[in-house]
Structure formats: C-alpha cells, structure tokens
Image 1 (cartoon, rainbow, N blue to C red):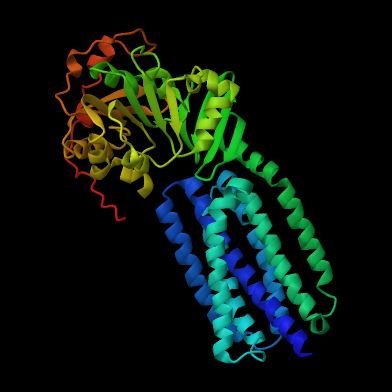
Image 2 (image 1 turned 120 degrees about the horizontal axis):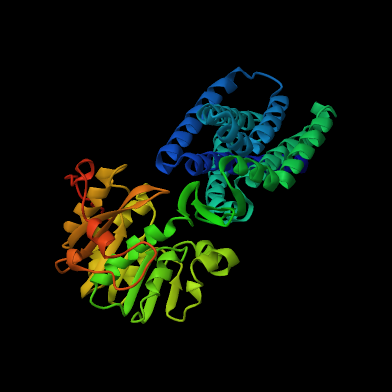
Length: 490
C-alpha cells in the first residue's frame, strides 16, 4: 500500500513537471506569434508574460473556492487547457488573418491559460497534503515546477520552433496536458469512475488531427496573409521565412516583413553597393554583414578587382535557401558559387571581434534596428569595432531605413557613425516596394561622392542618379537626434 502511494506521488510530481513545461511553452508561443505577426518583440513578450503571471495569481486565489472534488476539478482543468492550449496558435493566427481582432483573442487566451495554471498548482499541493509535510509538499511541487520551466525555455528555441513550427508545437503540448489529465484519471480511477474515458478519447483524436493537419492549417492562413502564391515556407531557429511568387515576380518575407520584391530589388541593391564600391580606392577585401539573399553579393561580384568577399549572416537557413533554391539562386546570379565567397553563419558582432582581417569595403545589409539584438549592430560600440577592421582608404555603407517614414531613425544612424569618428554622407533612393529609402556612407577620409561617376553599366544606377541621391527635400532634411550608445557586458 505504501509503495502504491509513493508511485502516485511520483506520478503527480511528474505531472507537475509536464504542466510547468506546457505553461511556459504556451507563454512563449503567444509572445513569439505576436512578435511574428505584429513586430515589437519586447512589447509583446512583456505583455504576455505580465498577463500570464498576474492571471496565475488570480487563478491561485480562485483555487481557495474549490473545497471538494479536487481530483475532478484538476482533470477538468487539464482537459480544458489541452484544448485551449493546443488550439492557441491556430486561434491567434486565424484571428489575425480573418477576424482582425487579434489583441482581444491574445488577452483572452493568455488570461484563461494563466488562470487555469494558477489553479493547478494549489490543487496539486492540496491533493498531496496527506503524503508529505507542508514544507516538503510545497518544496517538491515548486522544485519540479521551476525545473520544468527551465526545460521548456531550452526546448522551445532549440528544438520545438525549428523542427515543428508554432502551430504543431501548440497541438503537441495540448496533448501533453491531456496526458497529465489521463495520468491523474488513472491514479484516481477508483474515485472518478469511467466517465472521463470518452472525453479523453475525443480530445486525443481532435489534438492528433490538429497536429497532423497543422501544416495545412498554417498554409491556409498564410495564403490569406500574403497576396501571391507561397512557394516556400520555413521556420528557422531565428525567424519565419516566406517566399511568394506570381508570374515570375518573387517576394521574400522574414517574420511577415517584406525584404525584397524582385521587380525592384535591383534599385535597392545597386544603391546600397555601387556608391561605396565606386568610392573606395580598393575592392580586394569586401565584407558583407547580413545580405543572406545574396543580392548585394551579386552586385559586388560585378567588380573584377574583388579578390575575396566575406559574407556574415546569422541564419544558415537563409544563405542555404538562396544558394540552393533554383529560382532564388538564379535571382542572385548563383553568387554563392563564386570561389571568391566565404560564408559565415554567426553573430556579426562576435565575428568581427574574432576577425583579424582588414576590409576595403564593408556593406551592412541588415533589417531595421527594431529589436535590441539588431539595435546593437547600429550602435557606436559596433561602429568603433568596424572602424578597427576598415582599411585607411576603405569605406562602409549601411542601409538606414526611410528618411521619409522614419526620419529620426535615419538621421540617428548618421549621427551614430559621425560620433564613431567616421566622415559620413547620407543619401537616398526610391524603391517602389518601400518608398524613399536611406543609406549612409562612411569613411575615415572625406567622402567624394559628388565627384564619383558610375564605372559600369547597371539597371538603375548611373552618374546622374548618383549625383541626385545626396539631395534631400525639405521634409526629409537633416535632424539632430541622439546617437545610439550601447554598453555590452561580458
């Protein structure tokens, strides 16, 4: 009898461990999906975590009103979480695409899941009260709860998102909540009877079907979000990649944000690459930071005097895609096949810190600095680091968002480079997919862009275009924002 009780206690503690994993995964799913659909990851993760934790407190308070039938209540909560948590990603995705009321569903799901998890832990402690002293009971439950949270925090980014994606992960963990409920039913079957067998089977079939059809469900909703046919979709460890195509026109999206449209990408990439290549006295060593699509690389390879190009992009999924996909590799003229190119899939800051090379040209083709991880690559600390790897007569160029739509950000990047001991020249170009787009040239020497002539025949850039790029209209002229300073603690 004592052995049986011990087995029940161990099983319930194991259930607590699984519940903790599921709870944190649902939090991460809501925060990640919100960041993917709406951007601003800091805001949405803070919002989800705050709502979830406060709802757990409400749930813990509500648990005091459960005075009897603890086992029944615990199992019903598990079944409810299994369904709501399992379908959480689908509901949020669907609400964004079809209902245009995403925030309400995000708040509702987060509060409901948090409240039910808040009820669970006190119930387990009360169910186990006859097996342990109060001190041991609380200690055991919270120990496995916290260990489960750690396990989930490692499992989510390293395994679940890259291997399963968000929707399939949600259905999988809904199944784990159902497993805990089934385990509790088995332990207390003498008290509970057979009434829960049919719900267990029905919920299991629903979640299994959702898991199997999750790819189809995701594709259905993504087709609603994107105008053209999706020809490629992948969740990498870092971001969601989408390629759409229509009548030979290709668009590339990262986390729902357009990165380029093949109809006008040449305007952006010629504007990014050729002014700095024409200005720099030497092209032998070129460094490209970002630019995993290989389109800036394509433009650099038009210069015969280039001896070696180093491309650093964090996401191997992007560089592999644009090297191996037939339509995409054609778009970049099979630039990755050039023997002059070396690719490093790692953090740009870490790469520069470890590098011993001097570069004649550094091209920064990164997304806008709308997260902390990206903002640090637009900081004085990073630009100082780049300065130490730039040859004396070399030059840097960075994309710098729109001087029309984000003028403070544009002029802030220019100011940051100036305060990093560079001489700078802001310029801009019109790219129909994005509107007026800005770039900043920087060098240790005075920039002679006004005297540069285009040295080759390009689709967009010519001498006249380059001369007009540095002229800013009244509504986009220079402002005086603060530079971006960043302290990195090792």
